Amino acid sequence: AATAVEPAGFAGRADVVVVAVAWEGLETALSLVGGPRGALAGKTVLDCTNPVDFATGGLKPSSGSAAELVARSAPGAQVVKALHLFAGASWPYTGPRDAAPVVAICGDEEPALEVAAGLVRDLGGAAAVVGGLGRARQLEEAAGFVMTVVAAGHNPRLAVPDVDPALLSPTP
Image (cartoon, rainbow, N blue to C red; front, side):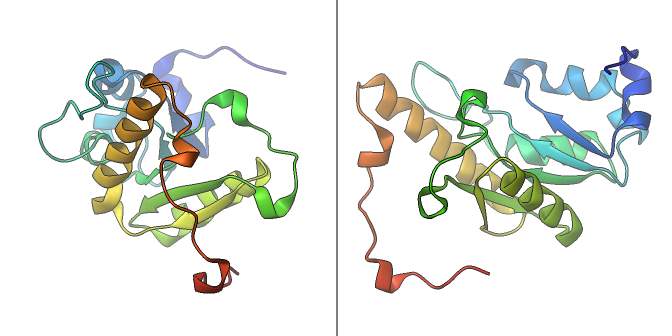
């Protein structure tokens, strides 16, 4: 059963926090749940925001990333950039395992990356850790690219070449 709570009491009830808000509301959302006051310290925080100008596909922040803003605005939080390229309707994935969506994730804390990867697996996907939180801007730029290809009327899956399976290393 769901229980309604005030935003300020939310963080104390959660082990994992998923931030999926518009870029313009990111700092306000974090403030409402006490991020700047340390309420998210020690928690895994998944940043799913897309700080993209939908008209151009470019990123709105001139430097850094939304995920890095989350980390600065929520001291002590273990931030992972994840799931920002997939609409909620994409999940759960129940098709063949060898065709499961691959979710690129990045973050600086191994335990938080493991939590994020587990959640991706629970949704039916496969997680690909691509580095530390410093890679988040690159992932956010990829979202802008995907949105631009979609806006041009094309499938973004067809906008990048297939890779010869022999070149892929096995995943654990």
